[in-house]
Image (tube, rainbow, N blue to C red; front, side, top):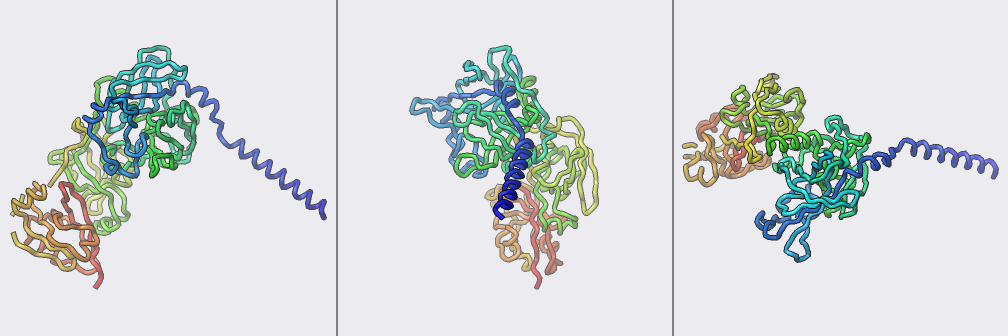
Amino acid sequence: MQRAFLIRNGFALALLASVASANAEQLPDFTQLVEKSAPAVVNVEATTSDTAASAQGDIDDQDIPEIFKRFFGPGGRPPHGGGSGERHSLGSGFIISADGYVLTNNHVVDGADEILIKLSDRRELDAKVIGTDKESDVALLKVNATGLPTVPIGDSGKLRPGQWVVAIGSPFGLDHSITHGVVSYVGRSNGGAEQQYVPFIQTDVPINRGNSGGPLFDLAGKVVGINSQIFSTSGGAMGLSFSIPINLAMDAVHQLKTKGYVSRGMIGVSVQNVSEGIAKSKGLSDAQGALVAQMQPDGPAAKAGLKVGDVITSFDGKKIYESAQLPPVVAMTAPGTEANVGVVRDGKPMTFKVKIAEMPRNGLSQEFIANAPAASSGSSLLGLTVQDITAGMRQQLGYSGQGGVVVTDVEGAAARAGLSPGDVILRVGNKPVNGVSEFRRETANVKAGSTVLLLVSRQGQNQFVAISVPEK
């Protein structure tokens, strides 16, 4: 009995050893990748005088989205230089050409008086800024040297969730630290306007302060991204890291070299996600696409025939599932080219050929806003009380558009949908409302159990709001 147990136990141990050996063979070995690519990864030390830093304005922690903290840690700022009258930021970068061009993040060198590049062979070289692009958080530097080691550039467009990736950088100043993980998501929006044109690569690679600006490699040893942001509640790695796709970064490099700035495409629309309520009210089969909430008068989209209320489902052959996908693909389209834009209007699929315009150089496209006669009226089923807009109201609300009625009170269904006093209702369904009488007419036939779609202007931004009317 004891012998049988030993035989079975020995078999189990042998089986476990065999499984462990097989698993070990399946795991990637990063040693050759590191030996080949690490020499081209550099430290970037940027020195900024307190005077220059103050001129940029202090940033409160509350002004930085909690979900995204740059690698300077909480506050997103470089640490003080120990009372020396200077601030030092430590980041990473990588050499993209043997004659001394270095790529890093804009936020690592932003406002710097001096930039020092430390090479893997311990040489220290002064660097000058060739150009920066705040919107993509890319900075191109140049050192006076030749024959430098370089990294091979990959194709971030081929990345897929689940692929192994490797980061090399200097977290907390620890040179050439290697961390690895997998691609978690491709094309992630950061949820804010600052980098709305960057479709981030999300990974679970552990990266920390000092990794910022360093390369993200695929298993072929090619750079596929620039490490830029992390999700953190503590300032350290939490398995949510975000990298700028190298295809976008290299396009920025080319433009910075040739013309000193980065141009982006625009079509002159502001979009929002399609909620279940909006999809139901518009007769859509699913809550996908980018709903056009505002349009620039005489902008590219308007000239092509698009209308407010259209749902953009594709752009130049790329499927659009949510509104955050649209700004990056439009921005990366060269101004002057034409793109086919697929939309759904009143349940019917349509295609428009839109000529892409160049986005204004301030990095933000023109804000598109939709003037008016006074009385009070409401819709009890919707839970809304509205009033015609006076000149004084327009000034107070910062509303300079045509038509609409201002919301003075909300309750019930309207309150649940998120409407607030001060909102300006521009449309009920597809019908514009230019005063209380028109609002009353368009809401007269609202029935219990229905969904009513309103176009609302709030602080100069248009958005669609679906109000679900409860059953009696």
